[in-house]
Length: 333
Image 1 (cartoon, one colour):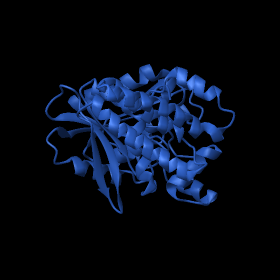
Image 2 (tube, rainbow, N blue to C red; image 1 turned 90 degrees about the horizontal axis):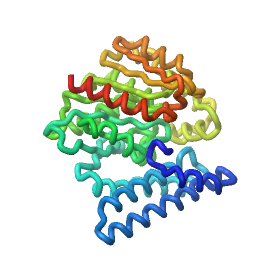
Image 3 (cartoon, rainbow, N blue to C red; image 1 turned 180 degrees about the vertical axis):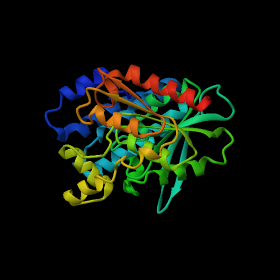
């Protein structure tokens, strides 16, 4: 949460006041409201940057308010919509290139947030950023900055089962279908270089990104942080979220379906440069799984941080710039 923009003091204060998981959503929505009200006040006074920063921070809080929280689906869906709307209102105040992209994906549509680097080339290379099981595009503004500062555009993507798209489209293992639809939707643009497209994912998004690269030749490089080789929902709330996003009511069937989210037979198809970053202290997904991914790919590279925990957030200052620098080098070479 801190890596994605939650203020440390807010984190300490909010979590200290919680006695049970049941109060999580309400507490974080209230914390988000504080920042949204600061944004309202700044906007009334014409302070666009302060307003934008406050709204974007509020959106991140709203996102984490419903993270793995499904105790009341009406409140959950309302908070999903609140996070989306707040980011859409605030981000253009910080970045005039911000654009919402709706991607036809029958029977509904996927959605992406596009940003371009300030002062960058007229046709910018760009990176598709893929969420995991319960991350969304509203979580990614801070991550986007690592690429934008290096002259790369970003397209943060909610595909099937993710964020606002998850209400209409259940998650699916063949995520490349959604990524291909996204690239089709961007193909006619003159401000993006479709010959220099990268993709990156975190957590379960590592599977989605690798899968997309294996089956979508327009992707030129793929870099991931953390995540499983084969997805095995652990913990009651993770399993419940998977079942909700996959629209499966039976636990046994859900676990069987989860096993189809695997890189077996996928990584061997990746011909692009493929960077796998992992933390040796990740107790959910052992680092040996990352080693297997890199070894199976034709051009796999492995970086394991001895002091890195889950998704390397404990060493974010190492992992994120490494990934962004590597992606820039691959897309601009």
